[in-house]
Amino acid sequence: MSYAYLFKFIIIGDSGVGKSCLLLQFTDKRFQPIHDLTIGVEFGAKIVQMDGKTIKLQIWDTAGQESFRSITRSYYRGAAGALLVYDITRRETFNHLATWLEDARQYSSPDMTVVLVGNKCDLEHRRQVSKEEGEAFARAHGLSFLETSAKTAFHVEETFTEAARTIYEKIKQGKLDLNGDFQGVKVGATANTIQLQQNNQDERSGCC
Amino acid sequence: MMTSPLDKIASYLCSHQPFALQKRVVELVHLLQQDPNRISSYIILYGIPEVAGLRALVWSCCIRHWLAFHRTDSYWDGVALYCRYPTEQLWKDDSCSETVDHPLNPSQDSIWQQYFSDQRLMDRIRMDTSRTHPDWHLFRQREPSMIRMLFLFAKQHPELGYIQGMNELVAPFVYVYLWDGSLVWDEKEGEAEAFIAFDSFFCSFVASLYQNISYLQEALVQAELLLKQWDSLLWQHLKRHQVDWSLFARRWLQLCLCREFELPELLKIWDVLLSIPNHSSLRWTWLIRFIVVMVLHCK
Image 1: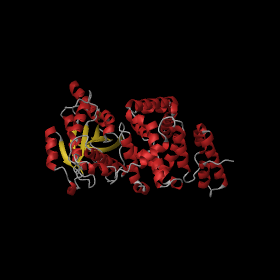
Image 2 (image 1 turned 30 degrees about the vertical axis):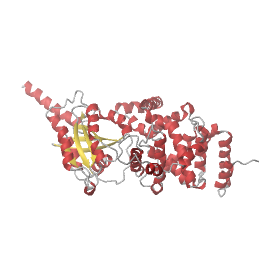
Image 3 (image 1 turned 135 degrees about the vertical axis):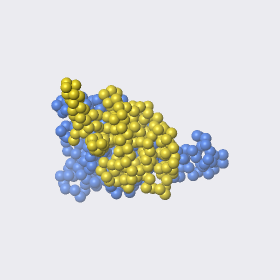
């Protein structure tokens, strides 16, 4: 399948917050109440359309436990976007966000787009972190924020497309240096032809 | 002819089996006692006969045999230590008699702080055991055993603690000792045997991969070199398409293939893995070769 751009995403956050379930809901549109534990990293991919362009999202789903942190760090490099996930029913997962963000900032490109995700919002009766707190954290750190439910699929699609759109806008505005250090975006065959056609037209107009 | 306890158990296990199978069991048990260095080549060729309980017996013999290289305390010391570690009772006596110490005591020495930290550890383990082979009823039933084993392991090896993935690695032992091996041991003994087996397997073999990243990297480099050597076309193809198969191979190694095969197949692979002597890294060599063959097989 040819694409105009390929974006590399990474999903991070504490163990058991629902990272793999978010991915499964996004790619397969299904929910698995008891998901296997992620060891190391797993992958997902999905095609989305943006302004009539095909964009392939390659998603790296990482393990949450501390002992895998050093391996996870090596995956940040070359990520265009990150989903930083916490569980609204477990406050400690929210408390650890700062450490995650610090890691993400340190080991990734400064241009990486981060979306904060408060997952499991279907479990309203067990909520420990209010929506306002999530919003405040996102505002303080310049992130976009969504509450999701991998179970009901609420806001799952939006989370990924929101991140993709932000990156896409950055490309359009020329904020990302696609030929230089930034490795999170790969330019595919269709994007090239568009550029080439434009170049050809430019040349032609130059001739005349 | 003298019969050892091992012979007796083995003949009990296969008493209702066809004669040919009985003969193979006798052969295997004889080898286990007389010439354990040849056991791995025997298992690679013939496998362990499918007799309930036999696998647990063979695993224990192998582990006990190779254990001698790594442990100074005796096998049953470990079991005894395990048996007198009922986690629920551990704190009752100490905390009640202590008047100075109380649940809100913030000091790190406080026995209550220790208690709470143990509870958190237990919660983390429970979160993972509940998603270990989620579709197997057996593992739902044996969750308390798994939690106890992983908890004790973390307590006995503070340098390692509990690491995700241990839950997967403990599962085959739970199956082999607490289900398949229930003819050989009662519940309590089986759990203790399973624990010792897991403990020695993890410490003598897998732990290095978790403790030291460079060890894992080195293993992956070796695998890469082997692939290049065995099938340079495939190796070039992967390189050209920028397929970094070490991303997957890392998990294959760290979990000793637990996720890559269904349990019945996995047990056959582990039969070989456990029967290989652990000194001079023979086991690693075998496992690394195995994963390269997996890649060749996918071609």
